[in-house]
Length: 385
Image 1 (tube, helix red, strand yellow):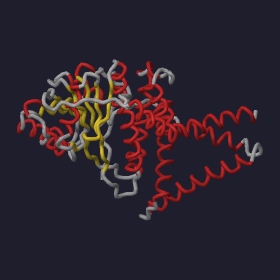
Image 2: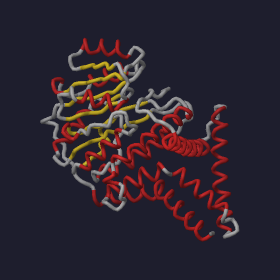
Image 3: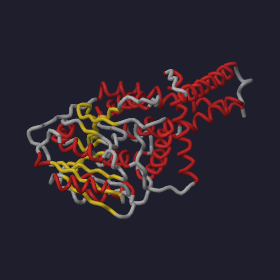
Image 4: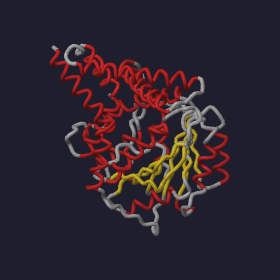
């Protein structure tokens, strides 16, 4: 029995190290030898439709749309289309005003809730663009972002482009910014070889003909699903750091927990629609999906397996005593991070462990919600500072 537990321990621990440590190194090295030279052409820009699905976004929607309208892009070659998922605040009034002020703004209020995928399906049909750009309601595009992303579609290999979202510094001790900077570098490496695993959902573009109709009413992660469907169609999906935007971080670690829990439900719901990539040996994209996403989504399960096996292997070797003490020490640091942050004392090592275990807790909670409860495709806007 101990031998079986030993192998489960080793395999689970290896997968944890692989998704958080080994894979970032592997993809960086791979990008150095397999990077593709994608060509930009800013002299013959395509028509662009920016699509925004909104629900109760009165605090941010005006600034987002006005920032897009100020883009350095030919005014007659882009439009902004906003669909409201039966918003109950002043989103409708704000958008009606903007649509009446600028002919590039199109607003479609829907009076039943269909969730973000359902709204995107409906407003995509109204678009005139050859390129579709997806934008979240609280994302502020740099003035050159549309130009940089759209110009990459001159390269016939490119089916999709993700821009880079830069999180503003948190005032509450939320370490999402630290994680996001590391995550962005991994995305950049994947994008260099055309196999980005999950565009930044608030800022990416695809060829119009590659739009994949979302299953309405299903709980899915639309950005990951669309990215993989573009790659499945035989096109590259790249990442452009020169196309960037800004976003406020979530207000608190507790709000970040709720956001990650909700996203985990969508992540797991997405897997049924990407069966072509579920064999981890079916090319680099499948390997990257498992390494970058799936193993990370199941990392709390893996950690629980490690701890469970470790407890039954304490007399197997002194290594396992050291191992369990090390895990306990990091958990204690996370607890200290929680209490220190609660009283306004923020020490980075403590905060990082607090954020890490908080993330694992959110993933686990989201997993159980997906496994045992009825989920919904509708959403609530995330609280921002």
